[in-house]
Image (cartoon, rainbow, N blue to C red; front, side, top):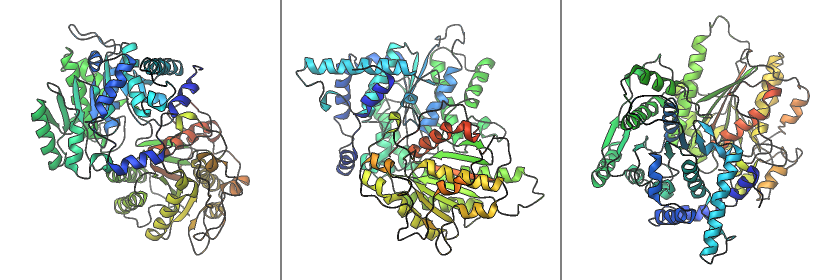
Length: 595
């Protein structure tokens, strides 16, 4: 077998469970069970490890419903500020590991060292070391090494690989984020964490974790271990607190409640991650990081120590979460949301940004035409309609506007129109038939048209087409063609909903291979063909650089797979469209994301 990075990702993708299997597990409630940890321990044995081997990583284990990724990123950012920090009697730090999920544009993002994803070379090296060990173990057990039973599923494999990488690279501390739940999560093979944390809890993954906050709290509390402190926000629901306190007593774990720190509460204090809700995540991260550093002999009241912590909070990077990007004429607001609470918080953040933007302008003159405001949304595997309604209600209230968007675009997580795709971004755990027929998107369009009849609503197949629509309107506004800009994605005089045609194919490839002629044909809920290709043809001037006046705002939210695909589109066309971003590397087009 070849040993390139792409070969590694292609092999990894064979370990994904398809939609039928995942759906059956969800419905049966068998996804998380008492055999999960024993099974994971056996996989570790086959790779050459015992769970106790990972104690050397002095792991920080994090569970939660909301903000666990951001909290993990804050902790990692703080700890990396102490690399080569010399304090007498303290543990020298040279490498800080971070294992998190999901990834946005590259699977390497999941396994980081010192705030950077593994290089392609290192990813391939450690991936195939684990792969070969598993195949050899299967042979020794008289099993077929090519069988699907010879290797764990996708997330378990990456968990094994992360631990193997951190041991091999002699990482000093590993910040480990749970995948789903805690008690039966594959990361919970950690026997002796240095510290644990449980971020804000909410209802999610009910088929796996239960449909009450108490049941969910029990699963999350599974990461508590004897003798290890566990930090959690004081704002947790009372039912969750009761469960966590009971589990802490049973396990001999000290449970500590955390409030937002006064310094962080200060409106003048700037965190590296935007959003009011990040204040509790940052405060939790400070408690965890400082607790870990104190245990390693660091003087936490030292002036230099405080400066390093503040820098860690200020310069953390976590793309796609309360993220803003600029192009000439466009300001993009980007935030993923996977629960109803998360979509509400995302909406509140977007509204606060708009209000701040308006208050900072002199207001001396009103534009002749209102500034277009776009929504690009998808949520493929959850109750998308409930998410859309929650977002609408949140923004209507926050902005005191019954029509918070002039244009609304619903798309799948398929990224590019053309054939071919980046292997990192293939996910097969959603219903391919629903994706091909745009079932979710059509329902969303009908729902939004009812709650906001004045908005122009579109359904398109790909994220690229959605981005083209926004860019096209920005171009037309920039050149003073406002009427054309409005007409560019209006959908007729009597109805505001426009959709591409259904397709009978259930394959991912068929979704991508639909020709431009097939992607915009009238259906029962539309009255015109809506094609960004047509309007782009007459306005081919590039958007230009990022320092021009904003004429269009756009909010991209919902699935993190949508957010990752959007960032992929933005980065791959950055040079030609004048995007101002964080400088992430450009990737090849043709991405497909489901989920």
